[in-house]
Image (cartoon, rainbow, N blue to C red; front, side, top):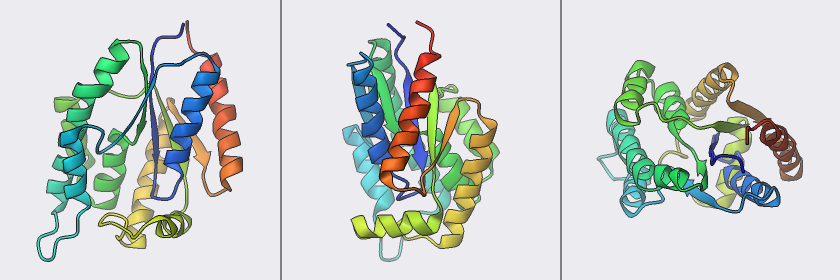
Length: 212
């Protein structure tokens, strides 16, 4: 049996992260990996879910400043990693997470302009450089992604940001993903059937390379 792995799905709003999480979970089960935990960031613990609601809430005259948003993201992330992700991996359970640390680099770093060295310091201090075994980055243009998101639900605080913000966020995602050998890039501008096929193909290739 392959040692349990931590797999992260990344991408802009409307990239299809939920579908990708389910696709990969089903694929793992078909390959005899039955113990799989799905989580989302921020969220998936009671405290982290409360933080998620706070981050996404629109206040009349006191919306979060960018540094507060970053620190809240990390507070939720630390809670989830320590309470759920690490214990699951230790017990032989594979973990698939909708977002992780790359999201902060892309959104708060690339999009909001917080110096990336600060985000790396937070990662080092509080996550002890806890990184995924694999990241699947779903690359979608902001125009397509936001149009999809708008069909789903009313846009929350983060989803309501400018097109320019999301273009900067995507640029950062691509820059980091292309440099990371543990990241698979998927063209998420395509229809859901084609995207699912591409994820399945690349995931099977990755699985076949894992050491038993």
